Every structure is written in C-alpha cells, then in structure tokens.
Image (tube, rainbow, N blue to C red; front, side, top):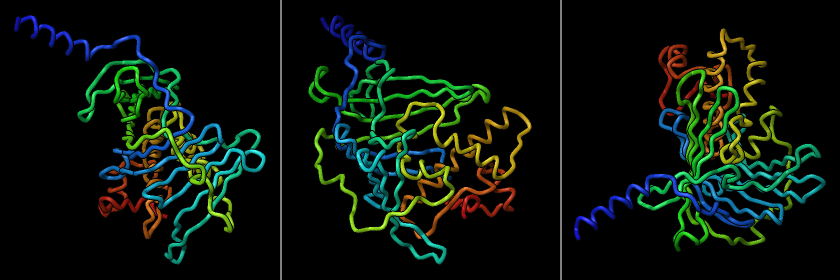
Length: 321
C-alpha cells in the first residue's frame, strides 16, 4: 500500500514538471488595477528595483501609471483631442539644482495614436509550458520566444489560480531573458513581480490634474516616447524595443563607428542598460538627475579605467549630465 502511494506521489511530481495540455490562456479582462515592482538586475552596480501601480481601462481608452508611490504620475488618455494625449507629472531638477514639479504632455498623431498602457503582456503567441512553484506559490508558466537578428528573447509569465484550474488567472511574475546568438551569451534580463491584482477600478482615478500648464516633453525629441511611456518596453514581447531604436541617434550624435558586427552588438547592449538606468533613476525623485553622454556604450571596466578608477559604486558619474 505504501509503495503504491509513494509511486503515486512520484508520478504527480513528475507530471508537475512537464508540459500539460488543455490549459486556458489567462485573460485579465479589459479593466484592472495592479501593483508591481520592476527589477533591472543589469542596471547600475547593484541593479534597480522600481515599484509602480497601474490602473487600466481598455473600453474607456485610458490608463494611469504611478512610479515609486506616485513620485511620477502618467495618464494615457486615448479619447482626448484628435489622437489622444499622454500627461505626466514629475519632479525635475533644474540647472540651479532646485527640484520642481513639472507638467508634460505628448500628443498622439494619426500614425501613432495614444492608447491605454497595459501593465501585463499581451499573451497572444504564449504557450503553456509547465506547472511550477514560484516563491512558494503553485503557478502556471506561460512562455513565448521571439527573435530578430541576433536577439532571441524568452518571455515567461507565472500566473496563479486561487480558486482552482478553472478560476480566473492572477498575474504573479513576469520575466524576460535575452540571448544574443552572435555574442553566444545571455546579455539581458528584467523581471516584474505583481501584487494586489483586482478587476475593478474607479473612474476619477484617470483624471489628470487640471488648472495646470502642460508643456512638451524635453529634448531630445527621439527620447520623448520612452520618457512618456517607459512601461511599454518592458511588457511588450518585441525583441527590438524603443530603447534599442535610440541607439541609432546615439551613434550619430557621438560619431560612433564600430570595427565589427560583434562589437556593435556589445556596444548596443551597454547602451541599453545605461539608458534604463538613466530613466529609472530620474523617476526616483532624487535631488540630482542623470543622462546619456559619450560613455553610455562603455562597459563598467572601461569607464573605471577612463575615469582613473574614480567610478563610485552606485553613482555612475559617466552618465551624469
């Protein structure tokens, strides 16, 4: 009898670690509220963890994203003006090092209208991979692999179903691992932990502050989209993000010409992590701001050598304006 029970337990464990068909693709609905924390392990010396909160209303064509306990608030209103508007309220450190609250806006166009920003990936093309315990919680794991050129990204979403296999899914963890086939190594990774998911939200949460003068996002113009809507790059499953596309203007500005395709891939990867560090740091509401400069495509070892070993951990002066 005990042998039969032991065999049954082993069978369950084996089945739990292998793909199982017949699963329902998670559907998080057209309206929800969720909290999350973005984890960028490759950015900065010890990585960056950035909390956020999102309210999403697809049918109302609107969403709101708050970073770091509302330090930065972003409203994406798709039915405002002709093609929608993004409104952002954010602290900005001025040239005199005095912090001020600024009100920015980015108007949509016919070619690029403003749409509400989801906090969760679009699961089209995802396939059920396996059942797995993550951080002590039994989860379904859904997986998608995309490739463009030398960039091969693997996306996984962990979801839990608190009331059984047929109950609505609740997002738990999202992870991207990037592999570069030319470099032959994993060179990118980020994660999002989700909590407090709810299928309800309140209408007035989407109303941006009135009685204010909203100005255009600051230069350079090619950075405005990622300044206005950074979350898009992380929940999208495109292997070429908006951050990747900013590498072209960077090369042109600093007259970069690399010796080989492999070096180009390496430099683009350094640039990508520098850019993420810069924008995430500037959303923290600190008393200083950082920005992209001539060192943004260098490795940490190169930057330390070029600055005479004076690179201070946690405060990368090489990207400071």
